[in-house]
Length: 93
Image (cartoon, rainbow, N blue to C red; front, side, top):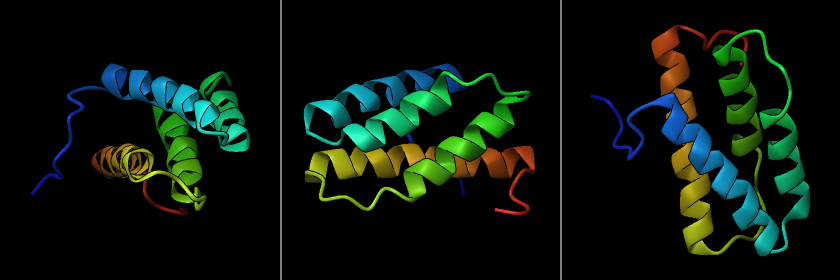
């Protein structure tokens, strides 16, 4: 069974990550915002590589976030994880 997500495609997910970057910055989490921004603005060979890097960065976010922000981080992480499984790109991570 597929996880529940509001994202129906990668473009929606990427737009949500960009919004998440701004949200993190507004709530004082500039380090995390910079990490995600750097990942989003790096030239990747495949979308799978980009998803993998975003997944790892989102997974490693352990800050003291508001419940709403934590939920958004988790939602983005779950989408990236699930989408990489669909692509068969889970090995080594």
